[in-house]
Image 1 (cartoon, rainbow, N blue to C red):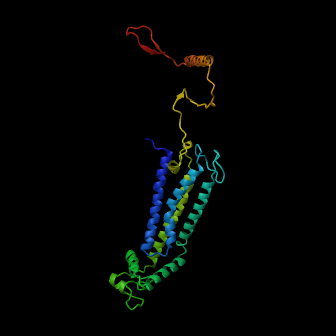
Image 2: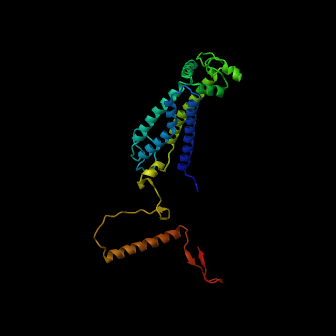
Length: 302
């Protein structure tokens, strides 16, 4: 079975949005695992952005195209050539643009400059040290094979039981000589880049999907719209490439007389004769019995 344009676009969009959702999910997991100083709201908004955008675009498109025989080129803020308002789609695109801009801007603040990133990481590490979050610090040290924040003995885990700083226990137990600030900062930048990529990727998908014309209604409208005017089908019968057109005549109680019936039959017969003659003139032969030959009565085509 041949795959339509609509099916290909739908399948590609689902796979692409699922990929972006998975990317945002990994970023959220890394943020929590490595105690990165990224706002939880930022990772949550980035995780919800791809599915929300997909559903919102489909819903707005179905509302925009409701009752339209085909999808025309979009003129945002106005109407299509079939007279359908594009206001729902315009408002949806505007809201999504603000959403994507907020996510991308917040993610960009955790990419640069390096000085501001180090301040945030320093505050996060001090918060874990003051609250004795030794497990979280150990996770960072084991993941990046380092000890301490700025120096291998700087607030490194395991913490001193008397609460003093400058413990060298991590260095003595593991033999590590590198501090964690550089690797930890690189991880923050990598996760922030993933969140930025999600926002930019969703924006690009939105631009492409809105720009692709298609004669098929959206899957959202097929599920929730019972208006059959969306479906433009071919007539069941066609004669010589001419469509059968149904003419709806007003109801009348008048019964045709015998003369009217006879005239209508004669007109139909005359049209049939004229059509046969026209076909013969156009070279389209009729099936006729051939002359008598040895094999008996056979049919041939002129």
